[in-house]
Image (cartoon, rainbow, N blue to C red):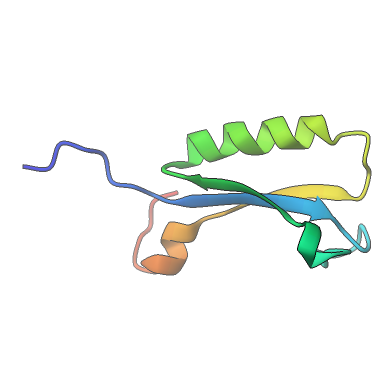
Length: 78
């Protein structure tokens, strides 16, 4: 029997945007890949730390991508 919780992978990344009106990065070579996390809670913790650390940089944004939804579109869990 599998006792480990199912991994619901999440990616956290961000960087400086070209404009506050969209999600186009100013320089893709400078996108900050924070990491891949096994669940939303740990991804949210990492996202929040990066977002708070860059609060004075108005055009810098961080995002959480639900990788598990891309890998398994039938997954309905967050």
